[in-house]
Image 1 (tube, rainbow, N blue to C red):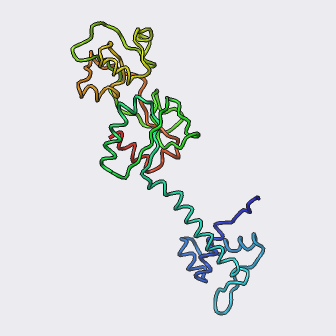
Image 2 (cartoon, rainbow, N blue to C red):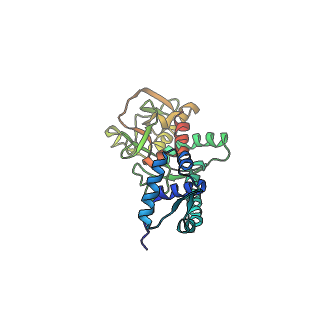
Length: 264
């Protein structure tokens, strides 16, 4: 069924004018001029094909036609307000769904979410494993973490990092074997030891299987814990991790609060 076009501005003016029975007081409520109220009412009368108000010696009064629609109109505005509150309820929700590569979740994201949850016991997180290509249209996602040169087609903020570093187990390794992983670069592409991601490369290095060149962001906690040590200096990389989301999600207060907390 095709919906009738509703002249919402005119109906809002009708409601105010009917409550006050005065175009002047309605204009004060709506922060417009009395002339603008009169124009809206005349336009609404033309659209509906009825007379809504009459001027009498006692002042402004509603016609029977105007009176007949008021109850339903005001119920409708109440429903509109309930609808807006329902749509805005998600802004105050403390449940967020986040997509990230498995190693990023394990090595970087999970510890930070734990800190956030300890500070606010009402926070709830749903974590989704995802690679660098995240389809927000097929999942109810609030935020994603991607590896790349920028946020891509979405809004985003970069996660600060020293770039790429090489790590090995404390005390060194028995050989100069380079541990390879997708995205590690050509130098490790033919390594005899290859793993699925940078997180596993760090773990392999900690076990003494060789040296791994990985994002400093992911290795920071293992370095602090003494599981691995850095070999040489960090090197800058054109690639990095980004917090991303389409503009509607990015604008949400709860998403911005999470972004602020993760980048603090």
